[in-house]
Length: 106
Image (cartoon, rainbow, N blue to C red):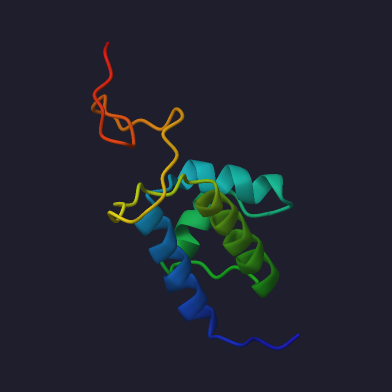
């Protein structure tokens, strides 16, 4: 199989994804190891800093692990428009207000 992007670009973008998603190195390594990754946590960290090169296969397993963890992060709340149809059954924001704007008691 031929590479579509340079190894260093994949490494840098993977490290960026980890930082942006605020994933811990430990959680990334645990997922990576759990899906057949062979490098230890020190090698993963060194790879992300550019001091160690993972094989293409291991780098792809690492990318898979990172993407799986990112997919598990709940999406951020979105601001509704005045024309949005929002169900009021059980949707509540952190401050104690339902989606239709009514206050809820403690």
